[in-house]
Image 1 (tube, one colour):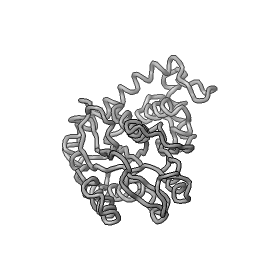
Image 2: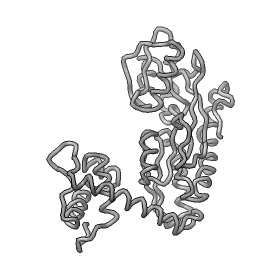
Image 3: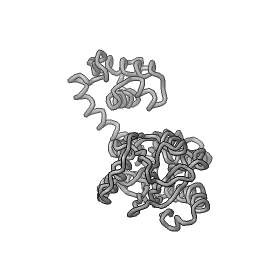
Image 4: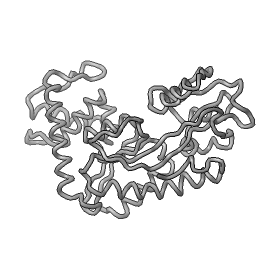
Length: 313
């Protein structure tokens, strides 16, 4: 409910920023885990407290009014200060934590993320966990904007910015995945979307090899890509985590090293430098153990030829 006394609340500010970033009340509700009506109530309460209209509700996507654009700058500053205060008040170790906002790439959804959250919940009985999944670049943007505390992402390939600390977790190769009993010859490539970093990395690597394989499909879902490969519609280039994420297609495909120069990527845990003290390192240590048992060991059993191209860092 909006604050009955007409005061500006931190929750109202967080709701406003979510709507401003998502451009829709329903999308902001999904992001924050509340109903669209709750989002609308908070926005109305905030506008009443400020005596200003912040959003043009007649547009799709929703656009900020001039007053909304001005308040957005102040709103982000307020949430940044609140995040710093929380860190200073109780984050010398995990025992003082009351809320943890985690960003995770979807690759770990199948096994690693649920086990990590379950283990942390058992240790931190008063902590509230907020999980957001998405593309690496988006999660890192949220981390920089202080709407996440930590983020597990693929490295972007550029020099690490000074504002964040990075804890490497996993090195994995890209693989050639073909329909069972077939090779990539005479099959079109089913391409991972170029809208994401990984798709652009794969496309750039193919270009460096002077290769331009025919392709008709560009998808952003491991499940959809592997389903099409298993059905004989083409071949693809994905990392081992794709098959870990969508294991039901493993029996219908063959997995092999790339038939040209190898390509790999690194996954890391990032946090804002110096804010959470030793907490990011503790979580990274837990993640490495889970990744070793749930990802690396099964993959190396299935494909021993991977060797140390797939390894915990």
